[in-house]
Length: 257
Image 1: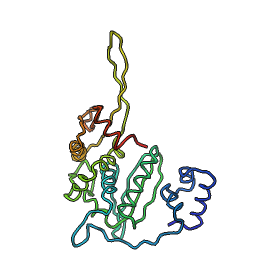
Image 2: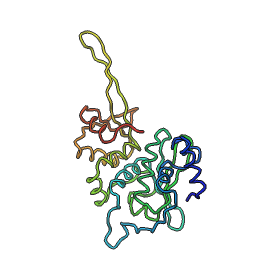
Image 3: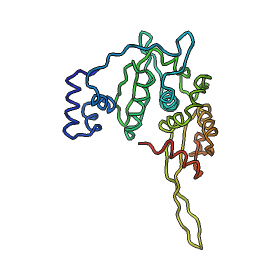
Image 4: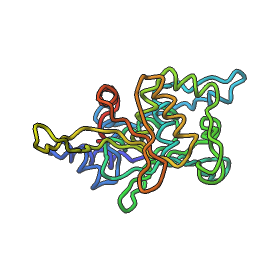
């Protein structure tokens, strides 16, 4: 928790006309936190909420859309590690090039476990967005030893129900972690003249057959056409290139930011 002096200094810098991003970089404080202080500078006293999966009658997380997005991020670039006294760290490693995704990840972590600590660890070229909780394994039963592509990854029925209700949030999380939107080009001969054409395309790359299956299964339900695409001899890639399907992806996912 940041002290009042730190909060006031951050807001003073913003009041001078500085951007949230520049203040965030200088002070090592997330833009999410600084933005929240603009609404309320005083610390909010939280009353801890129990884990919805640990109740006598287990229930879903209180923010299913944020959970679906976080699930996609976790399956792509996330991991859960045991710490001490039964506490676990959820870590999502994200490229520095996408500050909007870093903010969205932090927001999702806070929405899913609002009473737990969330912070960022800066490393060369990336940010590790981290949150602590005793209940990450309850909320993400895919947690286990070793790389995800070396073990079975399947959703529990309650997780599948959330993904079915919020499929675009899930797809967005997967693309924001292990996907991209690029511009491809090709040439065609028209009236005897070779012309260059450019077209947008979405790629998703993951070594896990199971995770790719969760992605393509959700695309099928959304009516998105896709194909397997090997690159450099690796059959780990899913391509979305049909014009109508790309338009749908653009409307609900869009380029990384």
